[in-house]
Amino acid sequence: MEIPPLMTFAGFSLKHLVLTIHFLALTSTINAQDNYEIQVYGSETVAKGRTMVELHSNYTLSGFTKEVDGQLPDNHIVHETVEITHGWTPWFETGFYFFNAIGSEGRTAYVGSHIRPRVAAPEAWHWPVGVSLSVEYGVQKQAYSANTSTLEVRPIVDKKINKVYIALNPTLDKSFSGPDQNRGFIFSPNVKGGYDVTKVVALGLEYYGSTGPFFHYDAFQQQQQQIFAAIDLNFNPEWEFNAGYGLGFTNNTDKAIFKVILGRRI
Image 1 (cartoon, helix red, strand yellow):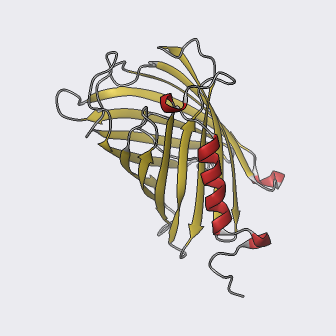
Image 2: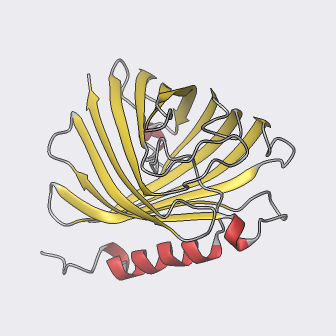
Image 3: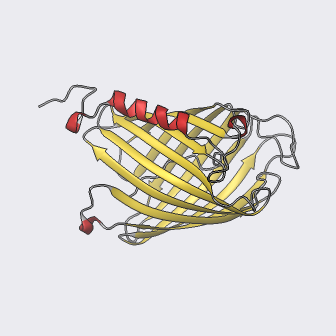
């Protein structure tokens, strides 16, 4: 039986999904991720013996135009990140990132690298939701990121219900070198909601945020908040394609970013 466009299993609707993401955006203040890898993770890991190669291409259409505390402005800059992830077992993978910046006025450079091991709950456990946990450590140049040595702990929970997909990444960020090194863990939630328009095309919203330290949250305009309208194309199981246009809503957030993720499993 065909399900009406806005209805899904158990009465869940696309309207409810949009309202949920909007509520999270309003109630979570942000100190968002750097604009190199803009992605909400799903729980699935790369299959054993396979390798995923991804290119993250992000262009800041409207960003910061002046250097602040030694950091180069990011207005009209392209961030190109190469991500290579290998699956070691059905539930364990390791990802490697190489960050690069391309821009005028001396802003073109290799920026830094990260490593990210991740474990997932095996399918044999038959959990009602997908669950995995990634831990990402890396270093980056101070001219491109004020915090030059960082750790990210990212729990991942996701669920597909009929045509609706939702993923939650309640991320914790820690700086070991830079202005945030004495601020403890910073809560940086990411949320993705998608709806399968066809078997190939899924449309949705992605939210990226950060509250500042627990119980000592930054003032609203010092936080960062971004929401992306996104599209995923599932034209081949060996390929990944995601694109989106994002808007920032505080003084500390880039106002407009376009992103594309292209991945290939080998």
